[in-house]
Amino acid sequence: MADPDTHQQRMFAQYVLPEIEVLLRVAMSLTAQRADAEDLVQDTLLRAYRAVGRFDGRHPRAWLLTIMRHAEVSRRRQRRPRLLDDPDTELERLTPALDATPEELVVDTAFDEAVDAAFTALSLRDQQVVRLVHVDGLSYAEAAQVLDVPKGTVMSRLHRARKRIRNQLLATGLESQRGGP
Image (tube, one colour):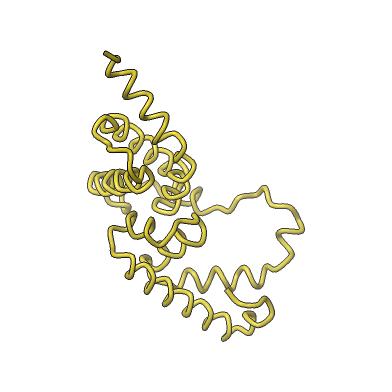
């Protein structure tokens, strides 16, 4: 009979390891900080390793995203209030990356700022849906799994968010210049 640890390792390699990149993208959209996202992925991987022996092999991404959602809920419950955090750490988190080329800094800055302002004006839950579907490339069903809402809710939130962004860009006059979101 095969060693249970070997079977567990084989299942982990087959079902979990190919999804690490997706897990990191989703974690980034949930946490907004790379270190927190990496911690969340690590926690998800540990939980998945412990449970992989009970996994039936169907829909590994949905299974892992469910584990990640539960891990993030647990992490948020344990986290102390942000008011007690070090303000210098928060300032570093908000500082933009300095590795952009001069062309990237100059070209389309007005449009980028308008899109960023329109995105920031969205509610947090609408921002999450836009990130999961348009940035992380998840399907509606996968985003619904991450957010623990029905697929139709994801679709309606995304529709409303796109409409709000489009209307705000139209109000600034920039939407017609770039072809819209």
